[in-house]
Image (tube, rainbow, N blue to C red; front, side, top):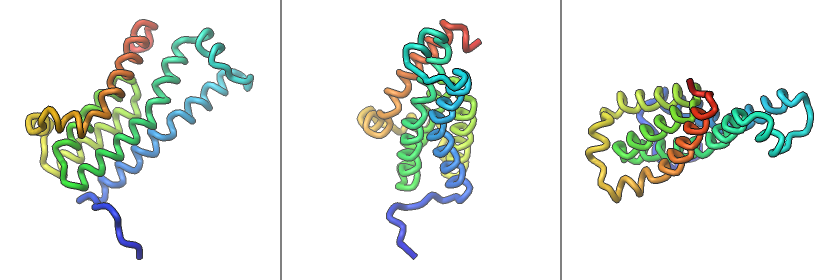
Length: 167
């Protein structure tokens, strides 16, 4: 059998949860494109047509397009857990959960909450303790990738609330 190139996580269920979450987040844009294709009645999609016809669909589309980047950040958090950088992994997962909540992605938020909860239980590192243990430089170095996602998620949340989607 081939040797493992990276360290693995302590819990097999946690590995399974991470894998399911990564697959779901990666497939979100394709599901959104399929949904838009069904809503257009099979007509060819154009960016101007979607934006002008229904701005709520444009916000949903942007939200779905951010999900593969979130999946990549989940992969980085999983590697941090496996490498022993537990505090930074918990901080990253917490920021990703906040981003998923702002993106109003029910599946993403539920999956992220489950992975965060299981990581905290398995590794014994709470959220407040993780944030307290981070240095400013370490925070931006280890969790800085979540900040652009949070900014774009905030933009989607603001646009969705202005359009009346969120409430």
